[in-house]
Image (cartoon, rainbow, N blue to C red; front, side, top):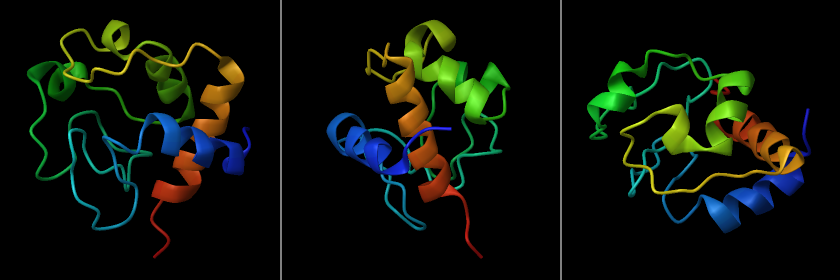
Length: 107
């Protein structure tokens, strides 16, 4: 498991320009990520996904995110996500720890 605080810094530097995490947060260039863990690809309500994202058919969890975040375009060919990825495994673990803590419903 990664470091949530370090993951937060990574999110702010590399993800926050396109994504929000909070419940009820707005979609930006990318979807709001609240409720991400356990959700099927391409399913955030109100976001316009590519067919590639909708049809990928995987469930987001620590393992699928770890692979996806290394190279999103390789993991989901045809995605509109422009992010090149995070090659550093520790950074990916930290980011996933933050995403898990921040996007998991508390109620």
